[in-house]
Length: 421
Image (tube, rainbow, N blue to C red; front, top):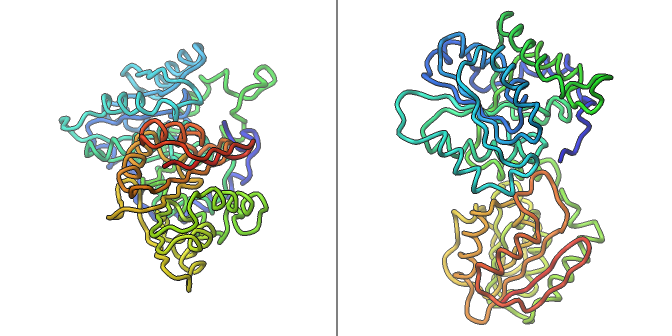
């Protein structure tokens, strides 16, 4: 699932080339490549690796580094032969590793993906290793999931990891790039020629009169060959970075203050709480503090947390002067407050957490709930590229793992609201 037109670029290639001068991260050079014993390149789909890192792959192969390509999904048998031809054109001699996970559904198979990536990137291996993977900021769910999983596994294994964008060049603008973490690789003429020949192998994906369903436009292919390759260093918490940017650019990114849908949902949430007053409340994912302000009317003390510093600042401003409210920056489930709470609220947050993160969070919620307390979950029922699971899946997983009884259930076409106790 993508949220852009793959055949229409929002920003011309010339603008991208000018903007690349803003990159202030560490560039990747041939000397850098020569310093690694091996290079492992992950791609979500056959052709991702060539589009995003083909020239770098060709350079590493020419330097005699051991280069291996790992593909997470492939739903079309013919694309395997295309990739074989492409990596051969790039000079890669090792066979491709196919994980054979469902195309478009990596987020639903994260356990399998994590196990497979850990097998490819064992810790304690001999030699130095460079790992390349799709940038999680791309607007494609498979790229986001694979990039996150690989970045975490590579860091744990002690490898250097860099992330390459693919669809950014179509949907994005220069303002979408974290230039402070971005560095380029400038190919030689020979490396560009090898990359062009490799891209020519993906006949089924090129958008031509003969293959009208192809998603690789002539403009995208030209930019991939003529431009420098861009690599972005990962952050420890990409999800927090995503929300940091959202709240820095807008003080009400989802219209929580202005949209009737949000205001009505918030009133239904507070009206569904069985008790009129709670001694202590804990809100996970407070965003700009609109729900925090509503919960403050029902709680003697309220701790609202968010992983994004910009969201915390907005929530503090919104709740300034309300008695008993504290807003803190906290990344759950790794970070967690001490003590127990009469009320714990998770609204529009759980679907951003991977299955293992939400499982740990659910267990900590149950352990932090005071006797007779309540847990309120409220989530949109739609889907988005940056969701690790659906709202309904998150609610079902919590019910199964927490051991709590559902006391209130409210289901609409657009959202699901439940209270457990």
